Length: 314
Image (cartoon, rainbow, N blue to C red; front, side):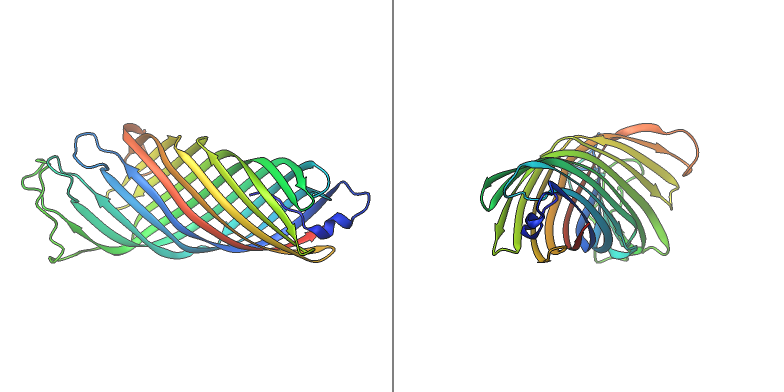
């Protein structure tokens, strides 16, 4: 997220900076991934749970401090963005397990209705704006982000391969033509909390007097994820402490200053995080006892953010 300033604000004679407040409305579309890595099985993953975010509407506010004449003079800029999602149904959650000690074949599959219980996004960015030419500006910046997604999986169905003998770790192929295992009610809760810091840059173009476009890019390995998985049927609770990986975030924004004090913008971004890994801890029953370290877990996120802004220059 990188604040922008349209051409109309350049006409504020004597003002070095301008402060603006924007109302944001938009939606996020994508998927969160929860991964458990194997210790003595053949497949790449022991478990993979994919949580749909399809789509989730949100409301938010964006507070920005920007140079009044960014195409003419360099200056500091910063922005604080808050987005809060509208709870509701958001696609499906699919759970896959590869538990065989002899092959990498899928052994368990289930699908459940997915619900977003909470989505909260907070981004703070700060940087410096350099005019490159009469209509161009370059903005290196750093963005610090916190994201929280809370999901619940309910109802649904599953197919499970038969183990040849109890505890053998050898499974027959899944019979998808056979009877389904039917779930009723809430099955699982999952929360992802992400923290990251990412350097980035943007290139802005002023054109047709009242329009401004901006293309930006961020990349970073400075990622922390804390997640919580509650299996309600088996009464087990898993907490993972993950770090590292890579974050990529390209973004585009188009703004139109339709009056000296107001601006309308449309923005699109893609936030992609992969490769975060760390220790997983388990306890049972849920909410009681001491966590015991048990294996290696991972998480990922791939979300597209489409939004509209109505900005008022204060």
